[in-house]
Image 1 (cartoon, rainbow, N blue to C red):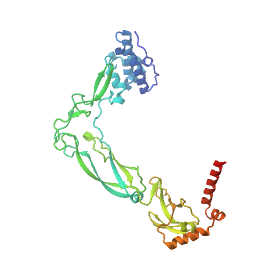
Image 2 (image 1 turned 180 degrees about the vertical axis):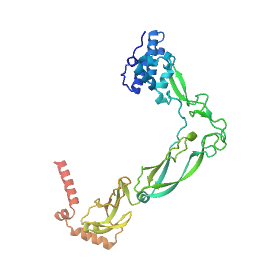
Image 3 (image 1 turned 90 degrees about the vertical axis):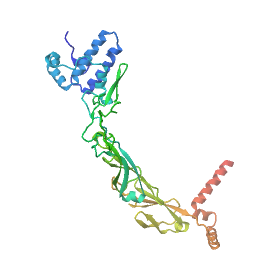
Image 4 (image 1 turned 90 degrees about the horizontal axis):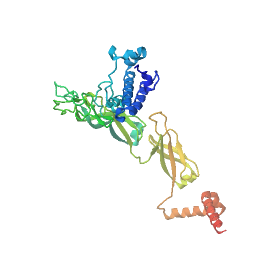
Length: 378
């Protein structure tokens, strides 16, 4: 009986990508597999046909031969052919789910794992964060053993291939008609076993060590920023690449300034006479004191902006502003004479219309209160 076209069997076009062929195969294999259709010879034959088509179309050389010569190009009796039709359901998962479980039919891969990334918390003052600095840090980590060059084996020997997984680092476990790949329990996924371990690292290939590193903190960093030091994390297993070190920045609270983005904020206490009359006061910046002109009749809470007295952005290079919030300070510990003067000032402002003229907020508030109670009684 002549064989059906392999593309027709899987229900895909001749231009289908390998991922589309795998998706089609997975769908059909789950439906027609003998384990799900026990005793049904028709389903068994259908499954064999599907698997044969899949074996050919996912092999680049065999697919090219099939596209050019048809079934004759892949006939095993003519020197071609696939792996045969006796594979079990475990092969399905090895092929279709190879990317998920790390298997696949592409031969052995190195099972040595890259070293873990590390994190170091670096605390800085606001001044250090704004200006940048070089700091030295000490980081406990795992480094490659110098005695065995990271192999874990005694000098003059080398690791051997694991007999359980044959170097794959994984083994298959059957669960019903599913076959799931798991990390090899003998070699812990490495694919190799150290029979004669190194005396310095006891076969681990890595030893504990505290490294001293110099970190260049760029100007303008802020809490939450990370500085990546490539290759300064833990050493990898059996010569695999090291991980990275991430320096996590935390900026301590400042006694005067708070930071939001590239702007700095501070509260400036102001006497009520200076607020009323206006004039110049000195305010702090990170570079020193500067003069700030206060306009007459300034109210508490008013913001004064000093351009480019903030923080230079670590990313764009733009400079933020310093924003000073005025807080009117009520005088305390008054002498008898000072109290007299304040009483005279209060009397000089008078009542009625004069109050509205000199203290419009106070007048407006009490007018609103009076109206509120009048409305309640009417």
